[in-house]
Amino acid sequence: MAYRTMTPPDELGPLVRAFAWGHTPGMIAVGVLFFLPLLVPVFAPWGEGCSAMTYLGAAAMLVGMPALGAYILRIAYRQRKNYVRVYELGFEYRWEDVERVVRFEDVTEIQSRIEQKITNGIPGPVTHQHTIRSTNGEALGITHGFKHVGELLGEIRDRSRGVVLERGRAAFAGGKSVKMGPLTLGNGEVRVGNLRLPRGEVRRIEIAGGDISIFTDSARPWVEVPYADVPNADLLEPLLRMC
Image (tube, rainbow, N blue to C red; front, side, top):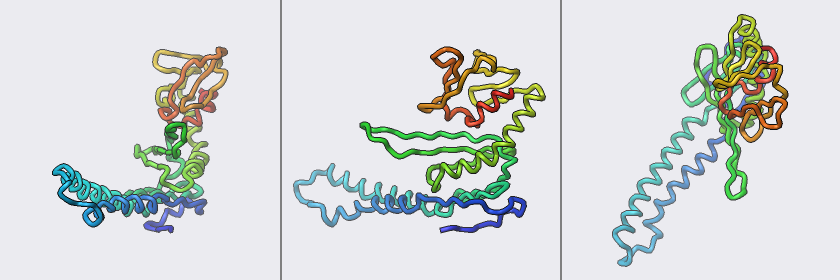
């Protein structure tokens, strides 16, 4: 269900796509499950064989689990109206009580952490944690709780890509460097700490296993850095070519 809480500025242009919050039903189900211990006094075989520790544990469960369930339900209620609406020139964002309108020309960084934990050889769900920063210094979070979160980030990345690259080109033209987490680009080279590599010696850049690897002619990478630590990681190659 779509919720409208504000009218986006006319200058954002026509609506391209709306992304709703998808975790509310699941959170409600989990929250309700935490209230099941309240049935223990009805069905548990209480009697003389129960020790004081049994009663103490039951009491803790009867209080603690419903309290946690109430907390989960409260979060589900607060987040039920979360959404991101993408327009031609910007996006409208709501997270709980936070409402923002951001133009794509004001986006400075998109930093992403995408993980999938594997337990006993069984892949778990893929989790997304994305941070979008703008020229006013504010950071907005987007998680896997949004439906089609990969497509949502793709829309914002694609529509802000040109302005981020142009901002980097202007910085290089002015003799400045562009810092991308542990990487610094500028003066025709890439730097990581005390390591320096001329742009012309970079042969390829690979993203695999949660890392960004920069290769020279060697079979082993010159350096590896975590993908999640590099803002605008998808723009590393074009920025490196122009630095």
